[in-house]
Image (cartoon, rainbow, N blue to C red; front, side, top):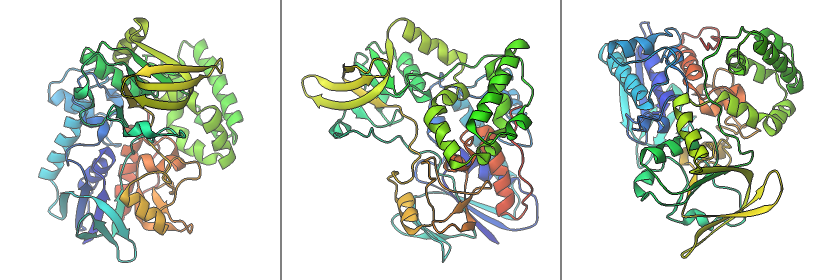
Length: 462
């Protein structure tokens, strides 16, 4: 019997487990999924109960399985839920889909596969004895181990004085339990970050009829672009693969953006056509080129690549138009709090370099997830890092691993039994945090850990 342990019960962990349940063959498998939080939570993005919190990928590309692209659409039809292939469904519906399919697979699984779902926290791994150590007491033996821990909450701003983070009116994450229920509706709110987490926060405030003024700031002051139906653009990955510098790739991209305009297509279609090739292109780049991209182009790429549905944009844009929210580009230099005046935020405007101040009753941290594993405060991560079992990506994007997800130790050895999937692999694959990519990784990794490994599949944006 082969023992497989999955650490993490978010979307990555569930997709791995579901692919293992679909694995044909005669071998016996004992699979254990560990999750510290509620087992049916499915991770922070899918825990929301807000009807207006939508997926950022349309139905046509949200199947749980890379070999059945219509699976989600078929499930929606079966359950009499209205949609079109280009619909952006509520995330709570997608959670229902994943859990329903998982329960179905469990009901009809092979008798050779044993599955245990444990609400427990993994705090360390004994690689020599091949045991996962649990918080409190107990351990689980494994032959193959998969770290599907997903993303971590954002870090605090790197300010000289971070006393404000101890305030009851500072929320270190937009998804902190009880945040919205704690608001009375008139508070002046300051949001750190202007990405997709900010848009989710604005939508939650909108749904609750919040009347207080909201201010948001980020280094570049850019908001996510909006999805739009457009003519598909043909693949041009071959052109891009001839380039080994960011400058060269950007030149090819500009050429195709011009061509898209000529044929009546759109930059969105060009971005989507490039998406399946990004992991390979990222691997072609030397570290100095990757660093240049992160420093100079990442912010532009992120707002184009990670777009919001039109339904969400209508809410956010209406708030902007009516002055309910104001967005700034700048760098925060100081945050202080007093009992009488609340928070005082000092920042430097990007355009003018002038020092400005803002007042707020509440601060919500909507910065992106913390990806530098040297800074992550988490028992399992800290213990594995200290022992050299895992090591951080040199650019602070995730963990060092192979293209197949095999974790690389501090001494450079590639593990033959310890893997990761999804967000931790960003440093290796770059495009690795959304379902269309994770489902491919999940299938490949399920095949690998069960000895049914096949050549790497290509990502698809169809």
